[in-house]
Structures are given as structure tokens and as C-alpha cells.
Amino acid sequence: MKARTLKKDKVNIITLGCSKNLVDSEVLSGQLQANDIEVVHENKKLDHNIVVVNTCGFIDKAKEESVQTILEQVELKRKGKLDKVYVTGCLSERYKNNLETEIPEVDAYFGTLELPNILKQFEIDYKEELIGERLLSTPSHYAYMNISEGCNRTCAFCAIPLMRGQHVSRPIEQLVTEAKRLVSGGVKEIMLIAQELTYYGLDIYKKRSLPELLNRLADVEGLEWIRLHYAYPSKFPLEILDVMRDRPNICNYLDMPLQHASDRMLSAMRRQITRSEMDELIQAVREKVPGICLRTTLIAGFPGETPEDIHSMQEFLVHYRFDRVGIFTYSHEEGTSAYDLVDDVPAEEKESRAQQIMETQQEISYELNQEKIGKTFKTLIDKKESGRYLGRTEFDSVEVDNEVIIQTDKKLSIGSFVDVRITKAYDYDLEGEIVS
Image (cartoon, rainbow, N blue to C red; front, side, top):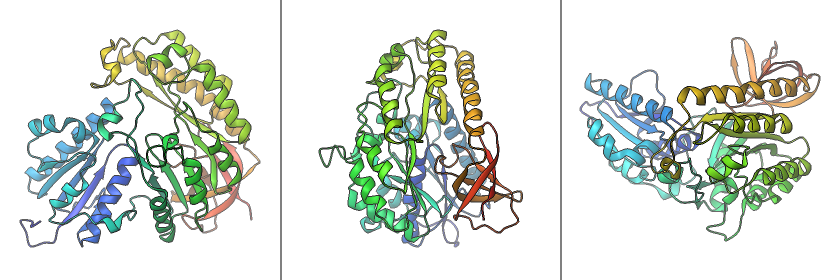
């Protein structure tokens, strides 16, 4: 593509939303770089002339942020500071026609699976031989790895199938090759992501193949941590836990969104699981992998939810004492089956209920962290800020979970592992000292 100036094109990619979008941006970056096009992520210098905004369309707040970001970039273009603005990702997939009408200043809109079409704007073709190669936007010692695309589930609240399509697994060999490439570039930790991890392999291998994939990845030399995100609880394949228990470089960590604890709400949400089945699953998980860190995500304010349902959720948390909990307020999304229901919980009440849940979890988190004082954990050093190092244990994923604060005069390498004895504990973070 020819810019209006003689200056060589420089592309800035702005990524909004989840880690899957981040991986998509990294793949796009890798393709651009392989074609000698300079590319950066979240460039603060404003010395680029082209912007690609990778949008999120998951819930209302994410959609608002995406639209605002597009408008900001369009304004920069109007002022002559940008030559081109392109928009891709979930919001663009879902609302392309609306966006083209409302923000026509954008040069082109693309859906979630239109990478080759984006590249054509730069007069280059998609290179199949680059599959698995990405320009990481994360620190070089950890990376996300997308093992499948789309979702076949029919949860009432979820618009992801509308934006990402049906479930498509990536072949094991391709994923192992990508993991080896990442490790050769300095990656120590890989976080497996998908809309639905446990469904992996059903489409191409006619069976749930996540255990086989985990074993193959665990064999990759130099890969020290493998972390599992977004495992659907219904018909959960327990053999995953056998692999987790037996392979030391698979973190004893499972991110399993449960969404609610009331049978009435689980049914309305079309979660394909009952409260008693969830109880059995949680017990089985903890029996198979003693000491496992369980993270879950919940939703407050689904249509028809009552204060009694929230109380049931609080009792659920107190009983099972999850290590990590996140909560969303329900977003009424067109195209989902729940959109036919009356969105009868006011926004302020949704926020209030979510706050109730987090206050319950905050106390649990504090108590669980207090139990860690005096114990020593293998800790991955992520960064240095304000003269102190910040790291994570195997029980913490990046950005969403606890950090370990380390005060030391020793020089620690970012991306290295050290043993840390915990000396203080707070609601969501720990403090510790290096064990020499």
C-alpha cells in the first residue's frame, strides 16, 4: 500500500478485549513483519501512519470502549496524523453494516476471520508457512496460545458464537510446532485459551483430545508452565486432571467459568449442568489434584434473578472457597436467546449484586492468602516497578490473579524463576522474600 508520504508505512495495532483478540493481533503482526512492514502494538510515540483497531463486542462496556477507540483514531486521521484506519475483531464482525454507516471515515472494516483480506490492504498475501509465528505483544517470557476457534455451546447470554462462529480445533502437530517456536524465543509459560477448552478435538479427532494435547505440549523441552483457561464444566473430561497431576510443568490451575449457583438460573442460562452436578465436579477436581487452584467466573443480574439467587451464589462461594473469582454484570445482547427475555434487573441493582459477591469473595481470598504465610513458592518474575519485583506463582494467571511483591537488593532477571517465602498477605496480593 502506498502512503501519501515518502515515509515507509508503520502500523500500530490497538487490541481491545480478551486474550484471543491479543493472539489475533500478534498473528497479524507476524504476517506484516514477514512482509517487511514495520508494526508495533499500542504505540505511544504516535510515529505510525496506519492503525488497526482490533475490537471487542462481548458486552456493552466493551462495545462502548471499542467505539470510543475507533472515534479517537478517526479524529487523528481527520487531523492529518494518520493515513489509514482499519477496524477488525468481534465488534466489526457483529456490527459491520452499522459501523460502516455510523463511522464511514474508517477505511475498511473486517470480521474475525478475515486476516487475508486485511493483508490485501497492504498489497500482500497471507503466508501459510507462518502459521504459529507471531510478534508477541506480551513480555517475552509468557504467551497465550489459541487451541481452537468458535463455540458450539448455546448459553443464553453469550454472543460469542455470533462473532466467532462454530468450534474449530487446531491440529495437535500445529500447536506443538507453535509451542516450540515460542519456547525458542524465550517463552517459559504458555496459557491455553479457547472459547471452550474441553471441547478440543471433537471436530477433527472425533473425541475430546485435550489430554493428548497436554501431554504433547508437556514434552516440549524448556516449557516450564502450561496453564488452562476457560474449561466448560458440563461433561468435563476428568482425564485432563490425571495429566495435570502427573505432568509437573502443567500448572495446578483451572479456570472454569460456572456463571451461577442457582439451579433456576443455570437452567435459564442454558448451562447444561445442574448445581448438584457442579458440586460433584468440584469435589472430583479437588480429589484428583489436591491443592489445585480453582478460578471461576459468575454473572449477576441475569433476567429473572432474585436476591435469593444471589444469596445462593454467596453460600456457594463460602462453601467451596474458590481461590479466584471474577464477576460480570449481565449484558442484554441482541441475537442471543436471552434477548427474548425481559432485562428486568436494573443496572444499579446488577452492580450492587456483583459487589455483594465480590465482598464475599474478598474475605475468602484474604483468608486463603493468610494460609500461605511462611510457605515457599516457585515464582515467575514478570516485571520490576517502583524498585520492587512483581511475580506470580503457578496458582496465578497474568493480570487477572494475585501478584507476589518481592523487595530485594538482588538483581532478578525478568522471566526467571525464584523461590519466594511469603511474609505478608493481603486480599489479593502477597509479599515475600527470596529464599537463597
